[in-house]
Structure formats: structure tokens, C-alpha cells
Amino acid sequence: MSLVLYMSTKYKATTTDEAYFITITTVGWVDVFTRLNQKYTLINALRYCCENKGLEIYAYVIMSSHIHLLCKSTDGFVLSDVIRDFKTFTSKKIIQNIKDEPESRKEWMLEYFQKACNHLKRDQQYKVWQDGYHAELIYSNSFIKQKVNYIHSNPVTEKIVAYPEDYYFSSARSYAGLDGDLEVVMVYLF
Image 1: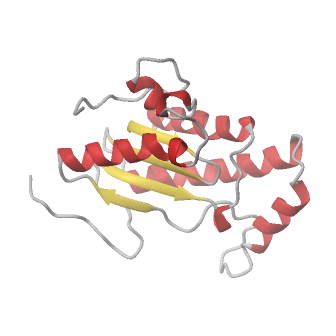
Image 2: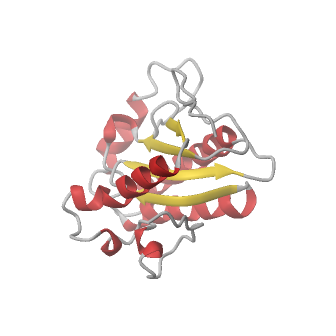
């Protein structure tokens, strides 16, 4: 395998058969995913993408303002299209959750996400996710190992848990042989 790293100004995953390390972040790094219902919005959308859009996930973590994935698209799907659809769907669902369910920051969050649309040329009422996403092409086994460790260590680094497998919204649980809500395809490089 050649050691070529795909990069562009937007870091998009445009191939159909290669794995990427992806980070998707909320606008202003707003801590949306502190509520259980919002985390399950992401879990359910990722599961849907796996079952219906050819997404194959090797590692993931949902943090309060962003999500990391080690993944690829299969069955002829283009990963950038899958991520675009994921962001579109979850944006609407996140806003609906803020409006419908208990949220102490409801007015502030809705106003913030509304103001995030001010610079947009397209007609949009709320903007939850930052434009694009950061995608790095996986180019070696050592890079896979580094990114899986990084993904699983995020909650430990943030002092949310002491051990990666203790964080429920992470594939670290699967790698430790524990139950979780999102199945992943395990990579055995450890």
C-alpha cells in the first residue's frame, strides 16, 4: 500500500473503498451531546447508516461537542455522501430534541444555531454542525492503531472516565468485550 495521504482544504472522504479517520464537530463546539437523548440520536443515525447506507464503523466515540469515527463506505456508497446525509438528518433531529424535550439551554442553543446560519447563502433556519468534516485517509496499520487509541482515550483525557471501556458511547466497550448500543467491525492490531 502506498503511503499517500489524501488531503484537501475540506478533508473530504471521496473514495468508495478506503477507510478514514473522521471528526465531525458542532458549530462553536457547543456541548450538545451532554443529554442522553442527543447521544442516542447519533447512535441511531449511525446504526441506520450501517444498515442502509453501507457505512462500516471500526471505532467511534461520541463526545459532548464532536464525534470521531474510524470508518469506510461499502456497497458502492461514497463516504462523503453518507456523512452529508448523517449530518443533515441529525441536525434536524437535534433541533427537534432541543425544542421538544427538557433542555435548560433551549433558548440559548436555538438562538446560537440560528445565528450560525447568518453567513449562509442557502436558506437554512438552524446550523448544528460545522461545515464539512475532518477526514484523514487510513494509510497503515500503525496509523489505525494510533487513531483507535486516540478515539478510545478521548473520554479518559477529558476525565469523564478512568478507563476507555467505562465510557458507554464508545467502541472501547466492544474492544473490551462489553455490551454497547452500536456494533462495530473490530480491527485486531493490538
